[in-house]
Image 1: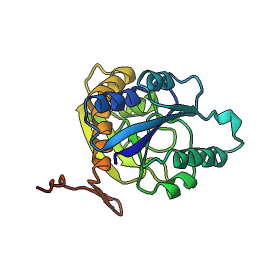
Image 2: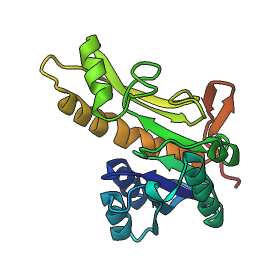
Image 3: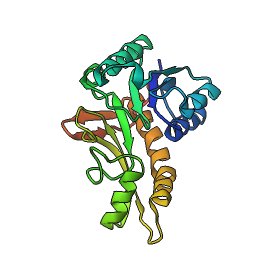
Image 4: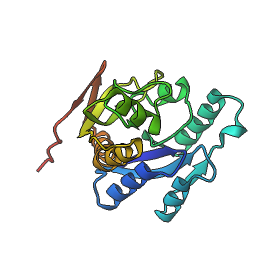
Length: 215
């Protein structure tokens, strides 16, 4: 049976679209996007899900007194949907330990820098690229990692770098990293998870070779 994937979103859903497109191309081997859950009721990502025929659900932050209450509601829904893998694709809400206990080494996130650079509290969206340019780095990129309670500190699955150009603005760098890194890395990582090819030991993630088919 294919592994059931839930994508958590808050905004436009460009990384969700990358996953939908990869699924349409048959690249999410042994995986299927079963649901999209949004913390913003009017997020365009929910429209992307609707157009792709994927069930969408809204969990407005304003309806929950605490992050823990929101997380508990999400976990209940994920279990109800029999989800195997949770993908954070621009989910701009802090989640608490209940999710990571229920889905240990089964929650992944895409971050627009080469972790451990330009990550952690306050490093999201354009802020990441502003900090990279201010620091004067020559390369930046994106990282897919497992999610733990500590922000942007989980074991790294995949990384990809791009060169920073002299004329880059935060917006230009953001776009290059999305197109050349994020939209490629995230489907790759999801496919590897769904094929049971990710082994986690401490901080180290090993990518296992493809399983051979029995004759």
